[in-house]
Length: 195
Image (cartoon, rainbow, N blue to C red; front, side):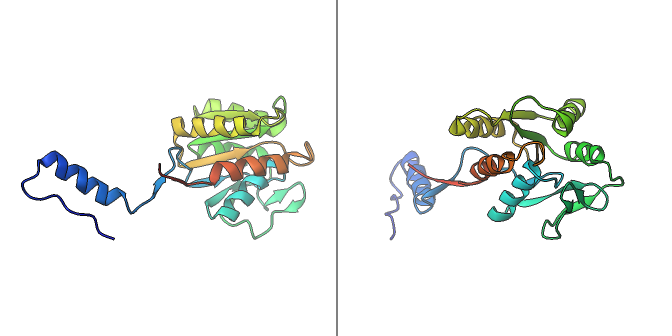
C-alpha cells in the first residue's frame, strides 16, 4: 500500500508531515518508553541470582556475571548451561558480589523484608562504588506496583548492564518464583503497540 506524496507546490511543512507519516506508518510498533538493559548479570547463586539468569536466558537477553572460583553455589557447581559466567579469583562469594556491582551500570536487589547477608553486602558495595541501586521488597502484594517502580527506575538510570541480586533459596524458599516473575515482567514487552 502506498501513500500519496505531497506535490511540489504544497508548503514544506505539509511535505515534512507527509514524509514523516510515510516513515512511521508501516512500523506499527514503537520501542517501549522504558529502556531494557542490554545485559543481565548475577552471581549465579540459587534464588534471585538464578531467577534473573533464567529469565534472561528464556527471553534471549545477554547475561553473565562473576561467580566464585569453581562456580560454587549452595547447591554445588553452577551448571554449564549458565554461560557467560566468569570465575573470580576466590571461592568467597563476597568477591564476586563486589565485582558484579563494580562492573555493572546499576544494581537491582529483590528481597523480602530487611536486607541481610549477601544482599546487605551488595547494597553496601553499590553505595561504595556510587552505582544506582534499587531495593524492591517482594513481600508486598502489589506486583504491578513493583514492576512499575522498577521500570520507572530503569527509565531514569538507563543501565546497559544490570546486576540483579537478592537472597539465596536456603534463606527464602519462595524468592526464586517471585523474583523470576518480576524479572520476566521487567524484560518483556520490549515493544509496545503504537496508538
